[in-house]
Picture 1 (cartoon, rainbow, N blue to C red):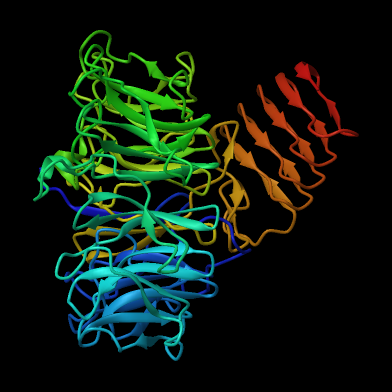
Picture 2: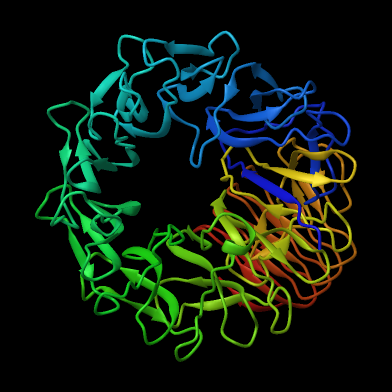
Length: 589
């Protein structure tokens, strides 16, 4: 089966409308091409997407085949070449936002620090006073300045800072010493300082902390102390997966005695300690390579661990030994309940994503194969979301990202190949985002992250006509976990029902079948039709009429008036001073 790459960028509500008249809208919930940046079957391959205010910046191959900096607001006319500068390839975000500008590394011709405010005139090199090609990379943020790694005059990659001006860009500290690269990376801000990982000539690869000054940059803790120089591979703790939750930073490390385990720090040496030896002895409970993700959720973090008894399962921790435990033995016994799916497909990362305090992951209970699961941190609340590909093969969901209140991921349902899906954590709220390559040809999520902007989901996708280009979809809203079939899109046009395609004038009408109707934030007049309908008002003061059939009427947040029709209706008035009337209501509140 041919695997094609698909990159999503989810856009959440920041404005009332991001779609212009030049954008051709598809039917509700169907993807559409934003712009064929490199016309024909040649691919622009947009990548390294970063959000800046009301736009997304990214690298792409233009019509001439040059890799340059592009900008998009989700419309065809708003997607254009920003600057010929070549965005640097990186294994993380290519820059960081400071105030209203983005600082990033780019090559023109040497690799240096650049800034942009999202305009061509405002896209400039910050400084060219470094080594010929300083190669800034691994960006982080500390207050109103950026931290990053760049080459110093010795050629080693060391810790720098910048406020976006030439005067405010300087070397902070040489950690690596002489020609040994310090390679500072994984910056996490905590209480006015930044915790990061770097390599020292004596201490090896360990956690460091900085306040942005030379005097305030120091080793946080030598977790795996050396005994004899030169230091060997086994005498580095190699901290990974730094994740802040409240006043703590969680990470994984190897102290040389317990294998790779879960650690925490509060920014002090004394407060940097192993949480629990999950797999007692020298064997690690966590993977030695950076395939483990720590994601915030519950009272702390969720992660994947193997205690040597239950196999690889979902765990959670609040930073204490007593608060660190296996959530559920999904595959009873020593079998793995979570498989390392992504090592086969993309970039050696297990799929974990946090959304509203819950965590989504690919679980395998030994019956359904690897499918989408969700957990709230309790055994009872850890459940299969949907058996997307029925049977033991499994849909193998991975590359999960949370944005715009939903989960986006890749899965193979056995009919359409690997394609894009979305879920709110319920079976009814889990659906395919469309089949861009009909049949068994696949469109698979790549390594890029979701970014919020408007009511769209933008994504890099491949089809047989355009190659790999920028696409978009506007996911319909939900009503009681069901995808809307009648609603108002971000352009103010009614989608579905008897008024499909008309400009919204305060009225939504269903069709003859069973509809799922979702109102707006304004005051709506909603008229259901025959069939068993689901109707959800928005935030306004709504008037909702059911009709023949067994309807579910939910008024929403405003002061609403709900009228059921003949049938067994479920009537939920909503806010106080609302009324709900039905012929034979099953429930009225």
